[in-house]
Amino acid sequence: MNAQSAIDLTAVITTPENIQFEYRIAGPFRRLPALLLDFAIRVICFLVAFVLLLIVGLSIPFSGSIATMLFLIFWFAIDWFYGLVFESSWNGQTPGKYLTKIRVISIDGRPINGYQATVRNFLRLADFAPMVSLEMFFEDAPAVYMVPTFLVSLICMSITSRFQRLGDIAAGTMVVVNERAWVPNNVKLEDPRIASLSEHIPANFRMSSTLAKVIALYAERRTRIPTARRAELASHLARPLLKQFQFRDDTSPDLLLCALYYREFVTKDAFVDTRVQSLPSPLKREAPVPSSDDSPVQAPISNSLPPILNPSTTESTATANPIPLDRQVL
Image (cartoon, rainbow, N blue to C red; front, side, top):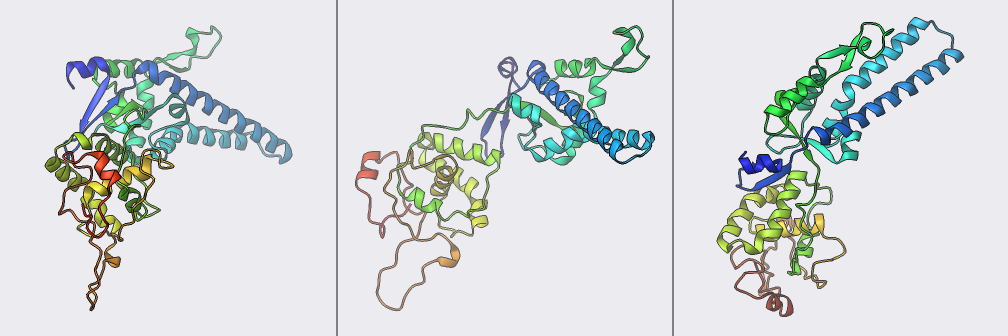
């Protein structure tokens, strides 16, 4: 991380496809409200459990030791597994992080996994150290060291460029601001074939946050990328998706990425020409089979001709005078 990134509290991550992502790092003061909210939620859970045990104890007589044991088990489960369960299953967020719009990710930009969530949450007690006694606040209080000072975590955050506490360093994670400013809101996809191809994408396909960000950045910058570089970049991104969707190999990668963007971010044809042009199915199992007669066969969605929205062709020509489908290939 360079000096400017450190001042701007920004982490820059470069993918194998040479695409850079910028994440805004959440500092101690941004993370403190989330910690307090999660603590308040746990306290409420403890109080609810205490009231329920009290009611059950009045209804079904049992010894106080059993009630104490059940309460301690519940306290242990909430205190130690609260953050682990939420962060590993809820995109790196707890309820407190969700309300304050921050989340935990890996230092390479990938979503946090169960192992990382376990490590960073089980080391939380070490980040709270050193503990001080209640006697410092109340004279009659017992000598119980249970008030955290957060000194270890503050020292770790101050010496790391990404404000990582001890648990983050051990787990290889960092806390970032959950912004979606990278989603472009003014991308115009004029080609009417994009909406048609998006209908062939499996309905149960869900993009990860990283893939969605890549698709959004590509759609935003594709018109400023040279044609040769655009084809190469789109091919790297679309090749595994073509196999996953079982599309034909000659399906245009550029058109596929635009179709993914259309499906994920564009609603009600806000930025797309309402004239949807029908395309032959890109599925391999539905590839056209040459017939015995001389009837014409529709051309596939091919890469052999210039891609859509070629910089050398004006947008007005591409939209106002569409090429007949039997001649129109990408």
